[in-house]
Structures are given as C-alpha cells and as structure tokens.
Amino acid sequence: MTTAEKIATDLTDQALAEQEGQAKILKDRAAIIDTMTQLQLVESLGKHGMDWFDPALGLLKTETLARLFIVCDKARKHFEKNAEASKDNATKVDSALRPRMQDGGIKSMNVDGTTVYVERTLWGSAKDGNNPGLCLALKELGHGDMVKEGVNAQTFSAYIREQEEAVSKTPLAPEKLIEQLPELLRPVVHVSEVFKIRARKG
Image 1: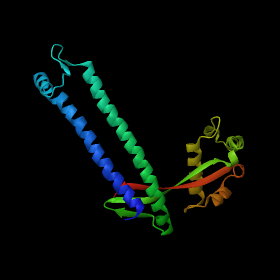
Image 2: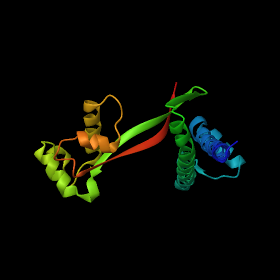
Image 3: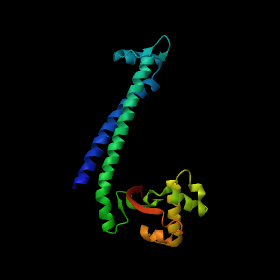
C-alpha cells in the first residue's frame, strides 16, 4: 500500500467512525423528542436524570432546546472539519494519482462501480494582469456582457472553451489555442489548463 493509499484509508476509517458516533447522538435525541408521548418523554428524561421537559407547559424547556442546538452545532462543526480534512486528503491523493493516469494515457478507470477520470478544464484570464486591455478587447469584439469592472472569470473561461471547440475537435495546448483566438485578444489573454481527478457512479 502506497503512502497516499494509507492516508486515504486511515482518514476514511476515522471519518466513518466519528460520523457514526455523531449520527447516533442525533438519532437518539430525535427519537426521544419525536416518537414519545409527553408522559413517556417525562418518564424517560426523569429516569435518566435529565429534567429537560416542563410538564406544566407541555413543552421542551428553553434550556433543552439550547442543549439540543449545542449537539447539532457540534455535529455541524465536526462534519465541516471532517469535510475539510477529506478535501485535503483528496488533494494529496489527486497529486499522486493524476500524474500516473496522465503519464500512462489513462483517461478513466472503473473501480468497484465508480468511474475515476481526469477532467480537463480551460480557464481564461488577463495576460500579465492586464485587465483593462482584456476588457477593451472584449468590448470591441461585442462581448461587453462579460465585463463588469473586470472580466467575469466563469463566463470568459466558458467563452475560451467555446472557442477551442469551434476550431478543434481535440484539446489544444494553451499557446496554440491563443493563436486561434481573435487578434484583439491574443496579446491580452492568458489561458491555463487545470486537471483534477473526478469520480462518478458507473
């Protein structure tokens, strides 16, 4: 097992164990509140020494709701922290797996019913930070809708992808693609490629 695989396995096992623990806490709280009658709730809470219910009002005490909020909030923070750790781990594994797939000419592979593939995305931006020049060129080309005190990165990158599709059936190297763009854009545009590992069912 490689270092990347061990990191992924260890973190996955840890995350599943922690999520199951948090899920059980929330499930238990929900079961107490949602499935019991008021009398059963009072008896259950009394039995466990938790005076969270006001039988006179027939309502959960404010403190009870505060306690439940704390449980939910802790679970939320836990899941967010775990998600961030999983994201970091995925980045580490990506950096190890992507070069192997690219160097081996592997576009996709099916592992246990999930397809892992290399996704290529083109991004366009102003060359050398020359946003004014790029904005001017886009306006003159009739694409002023992309310019909003700067160039909308998502919209402009979509435009770059459309230009590539219009001139080539296969991916072009950024420098080759720039040569195919309108003359006004060539001196002010920068095109880069971003490769990421993705997964989908099937």
